[in-house]
Length: 577
Image 1 (cartoon, rainbow, N blue to C red):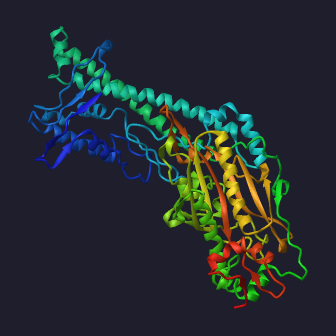
Image 2: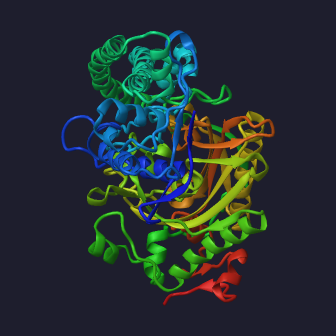
Image 3: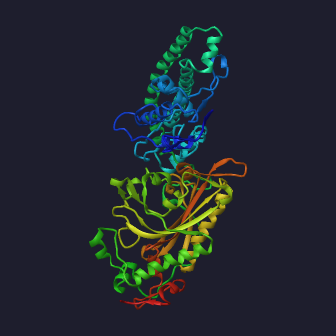
């Protein structure tokens, strides 16, 4: 154990206490350009400890800070307290004593491990190595390797489970070996400090028991030699540990979450299973127009100038088109507020680790607009910042569930969609969306209940707009890597002559929470990962496709849905502008 009193030193300019020292030491040194990061006795950290050490040992005042270190000596006897204060100023040049000081003040060696940049630079906490990132419980993967392999096949995801298990085995071996060697270094460093300190009670007791100074020096030399043999081994293992940990994380990033048994197995969205239909598609007694023709004739949609400004898959909404767009968003947000969801205004430019944490990287990296210079990304949904809001936190069970929503712009490159859905407002690079997110306890039944709730929230919005739709249970081939189950709402769009996706409701169990280190403490003080869920409340202008096409009139005007009129100053009809 370690004890440090808080008393002013250097004329009161500083205070030396454990909290201050650990705060100073917990700041990692700059990432080196080459080679492995420095540890506690290298580079910046070496200098930090040296300054504290020299300050302490260059003072003779007895009321200055004293460090008490207790350790096991020969035959496991308790070693008396070592007094580092008082007449000790010449000892500051003794490397062995300095290492003993380091070992006593820091319970375990401070190390910092840096990521590859794919998940940002991640520093460990003082006194322990950084935990590897896990998307699923690695123990679960080891015990259910065949299930994971089948899940990857069903979701059409490429991963090497056997390789992951082998790398994990070596990772654990290295951890055990390094922990053992570091313990030896710590204990040996403390013992050398005692053996080379003629004023220590232990040294004086040994002399009183008949041991000669030569014998004590020989013992110190022997322990010092042991240290000299161990340290190169630690360095060698650490050099292997870095690449091993990185390989482990990269493989873990490819492992899919197994789907719920009720999810149908299928190759793609054509094999999703319809659960129910609500409403009937409208039959027209005139030749209906598609939304682009309608919008252009009414002067509310301008795709030509949108493409002129920003390229393909872009548009401009003007006049009543812009008002209609805002109206559906405001309706959706108001409905969520009445259901107890907390509204949020969130950033849409986020760090890359947030994209990894929510599962959009690495597999969805091609779909994101990247700001490489700043190592940030534009989000494709407010799900990303909403879900990550409580990342790296331990919540109280009483605070769950957390229900939040946000309206935000969404950016998608639509990579790989060349030639697909190029007409109109269906597949575009920029749109606005109201998103709902729920964080709940680690309970499958509770997660299912909230899944049904957020799906109903979205259905209520579509029903308020008076649009016919159907709900489908998404098959395995159309599920994302982290999704346990997903329900899509598909709204009838006359110009496409089909039900087309407008909403997706997903549950992830603890997949995202593990990546984000988002946990809660239950009544028994045990820590669990949260479950996360999300769903579209409304996305516009895609939803304007059925609104305009289903509410059009024979004279080319469009009737404003009754639920939207309060948001359009009571207007009942959109006419040519």
